[in-house]
Structure formats: structure tokens, C-alpha cells
Amino acid sequence: MSLFSDNIRALRVKHKISQEKVAKSLMITRGRYVKYEDGTSEAPYEILKKIGQYYQISIDLLLSVDIRKIEVTDLLKLENNRLILPIQVDQMGENRIEVVTQKVKAGYLNGYADPEYIEQLQQISLPFLGVGKYRGFPVEGDSMPPHQDGDIIVGSYVEQLGEVLDGKTYIFITRSEGMVYKRLNKNKKNALVVASDNYFYPPYEIKASDILEIWEYQCSISKNDQRTELLESDAIKNMFVELKRDLAEVKNSIGLTNS
Image (cartoon, rainbow, N blue to C red; front, top):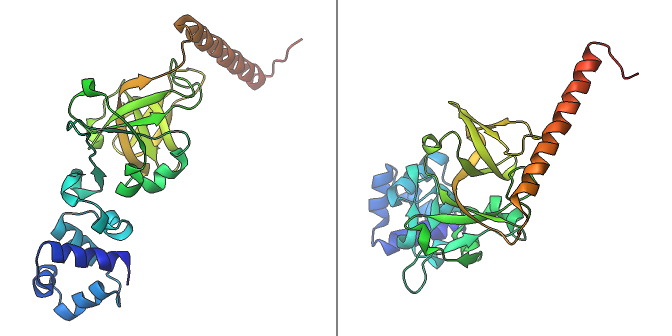
């Protein structure tokens, strides 16, 4: 038996559908379908895709989460049924915001599509944000002043890549870099050019195929009360450091050395 087998059996029973009807919808024989349900045969990708479409549930969820432990009707379905995010509300019906703290950040890449993982995250409520799906992420480094280590960026979920806008800031969840907070510099066809507000760090590209999630900045939570002008001074200092470095590279390229 497998989690997938348990899931497709649970879905079929919940919807009160016969094995024969499911098999017919998948355009396979009942005998072949029964092997998937009892775990004696593994379903190929095309069948997985058809089952996901049939029940309107992502393949990720079918393969990795015990759906018998969650209410499928309480989940938020996203574009092209790519994945499903849990919606959590308090006793007053207000949307709860999960916070990915520094402590659990490392597990987010594996758990972002797992409702059980998401439900274990700390939660807060920010009613002033209004309707939407929000999540909080930790800030690292000094690349996006005035935000600093320990701050939390709260973002709203972006369903489609085409919805991102130049000049706005986003939390990007990527396979290669993990979690990064940057300003969009240019939206290209198959990639995004992102930049730090701290000019010491150069812009770079994120391939569209590398992106797992995008969350648009809505607000931040910080315990740091450092004055803004100090942060601006740091940015100016970094700019001069970069100019000094560039000047040294130019001198080297034309054969000049310091006397």
C-alpha cells in the first residue's frame, strides 16, 4: 500500500463513485485501475495527471499528503491546479497569516505544498490587510534596507508570473536560492531581473522555471528602531566602496598602479 493508493481510494469513497466509473473517466480498464488503488502497480504520469484533473487536486498533494487528515473543501486552489494552499481562519472567520520563522525556514522548500507543514507554522492576524492569502517570511542580510535581520516581510500570494510589476518588491521562493526578497528590475519573457535596494549588490536573473512561489510585499514587522538616516549612510558608504572597487579594476585593465 502507498499514500497515493490510500488517497485515491479515500477520494473515490468520499465522492461515492464506483471503481468502474473512475476507470471509465480515466479511459482505462477497471482491472488496471484497481491495481493503482490497492498499490500493486504504480500509475504513470499521464494517469496521475488525469486523476488530479478528475478530482481537481494537485499531483503533489496526491503523492505527498494524507488527504484523509485534511478538509479538501477548505483549501485554496491555485492557477492550473499547480498546488493547493491551506486557508486558515480564526474563530471570527478572519484569515490567519502563517509566519515562516528563521527556525523553520530551511524546511519551507520541502513543505510549501504540504498542508500539514503549513498548519504547524506560527500564525498571526492582520485584519487591515483585507481579503487575500498572506504569509510572513524572514529577512536576511543588508541587501534590502531599511529591512534587516530579524524583520518579517508579509506578502500576498501572486498566482501568475504575469502579475508581477517592475519596481515592486517580492519574496521569491526558488529551487536554487531558496527564499529571497528583492525588487523587480525587469520582467523578461522567461526570466525576472531582480535587484537589491542596497546598490552594493548587483542585479541578477531568476529563471521562471526556477520559481516555486512569489509573494508581493504588503507590510513588514520589525523590532529594530534604527534611524533611517543611518541606514541611508550605510547605503552611501556601500556605493563609494563599489565605486572604489570599479576604479581599481579600471586601473588594472589599463596597466596603472598606485605610486
